[in-house]
Picture 1 (cartoon, protein in one colour):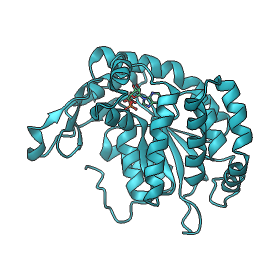
Picture 2: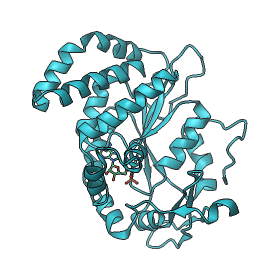
Picture 3: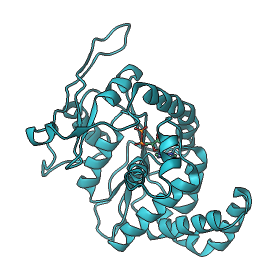
Length: 301
Ligand code: ADP
C-alpha cells in the first residue's frame, strides 16, 4: 500500500504541477521513482502471489507475515461490485476502495471540483485520469496513516491507461470480473436506493426473468430497507435511465480491452452472477477458495 501510495503521489505531483505531456511525465516519473520499484518488485516475489497460470488454484494468504490481498473488481454498472467488494473487504480485513464513492464524496462536499465533476458524472462519462488519481492518492494517504494494508479496488482501473499505471506501481493478485445479463443491469440501477442517514445500500427491483432460448432465468429478490431507513431513501443522481444507458455504453466500450489486459496476464476470474446475494455470495466464496467461517455476513443480508 505504501509503495502504491508513494508512486501515485509522485505521479500526481508531476502531472499536476507541470505542463509536461503525459508521455514526458511518464518517462520522468519512471526514472524518478526507480527506488520504489524495488519495493513493487519484492511484492511481486511475495510468496502470497497466486500461481500465475491458474486462477482456480488461487488461495488467500493465511500467514500473517504475508501481505494482504490486492484485488480489483470489474463489472458493469449495477452488477454488484460494491456489494461483493465490501463484503469481501470485511471478510479479509482490507479496505474497499471505490473510486465512484470518492467521486461522490467530492461531489457532496461541494469542493472546487464540484461543477466539473457533476457535469461529467451526470452525463455518464468518465472523469479524467488526473482527477481520479488525485482522489485515489488522497484516499490512500488517509488509509496509510491509519495503517491500512492490501485493498480491494472497485471502479478502478476503468481504462487501459489506468491499468497500465496501476501495473507500474504495484502488483495486482486477482481481477474479479462480475457478469450479469444486460437487461437486468438497467433495472438494478434504477431500483438502487441509499439511506441518506446510515449510507446503507438497498434495491427495490424485483427481478424475475424466465429462461429462454438457452439463456438461464434469473431471480433477484429486492433488498428492502429496515423501517428506520425507509423514509430516508435517496437515489444517486446518475441512476436515471438515460444516464445508466450512457454508463453502460461507456463501460462496454472500455471493458473489452481491459478484460483482455488482465486475461493475457492470467489474472482474470470470470464470475457469472447466478442470482441475488443469497445465491451469489456462497458461490463467489467458493470460486475464491474462501470460507465465511464466522458467518458474520449472512448470505441474505
Ligand atoms: P458505476 O455504477 O457506473 O460502476 P461508479 O460508482 O463506479 O459507477 O462511478 C460513478 C462515476 O464516477 C462514473 O460514472 C464516472 O463518472 C466516475 N468514475 C468512477 N471511477 C472512475 C474511474 N476509475 N475513472 C474515471 N471515472 C470514474
